[in-house]
Length: 277
Image (cartoon, rainbow, N blue to C red; front, side, top):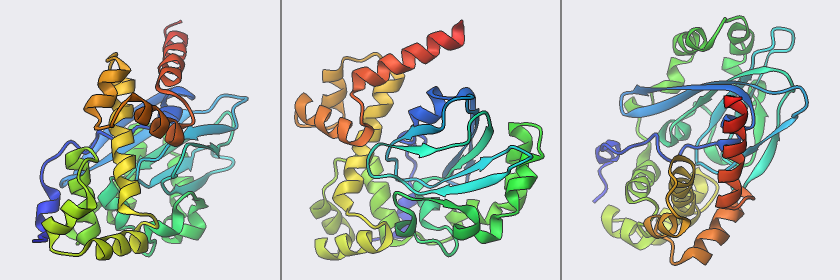
């Protein structure tokens, strides 16, 4: 039966939060992971080049707060998960500070249901107006450690999701992450004591999309982790990721990333070589 306290069981929640565009299509990317209770938050900082006006993003089920730290034009976007690979606009030649909330914390944003920002990059003034004054404050900071400290001081309510109940959806999402996207809705129904129909309704009402699609996102991010962080043959990546065969893996992967695994590895290789030079 459903017990929400079990949803914070130990799993590696920093896996499955990869945004390769932010990391490898920008300059000077840095990140730092901080756990608040059981919830990981990824802080990162990057600089866009003088010509690039958009960055590739992929589905991850998380909400990012993305602050432009140009003192002359500070601004911020609240970025909900996308459902397929797409480009999001950024200012050229600008420093950005980002906060990627865990999937559970993304469920618990005050006054902002996740379904309202799926496929949306909303100005913070519209989505989380109580935090709009963070933009100029963060822009005035000197670097990543100072920005993290300021965000922790002024944005702690956004980081305290472990003291609140993420409900049946949060519980199911954790089960999906624990299984690598392999658990079925039928199995979740048996585990929680709710019907499959009820679980689908709760996901649609909360996230704006189905539990089946969330499972696919988890599986894709798990595969993306292997593509990015290992040199394993793609056939092994597909098999360990729970795909029926390599054709299924390629189709699903490209629908979410708009690139093949080989293209992503080649892109990372180009940017890595460029950094070394």
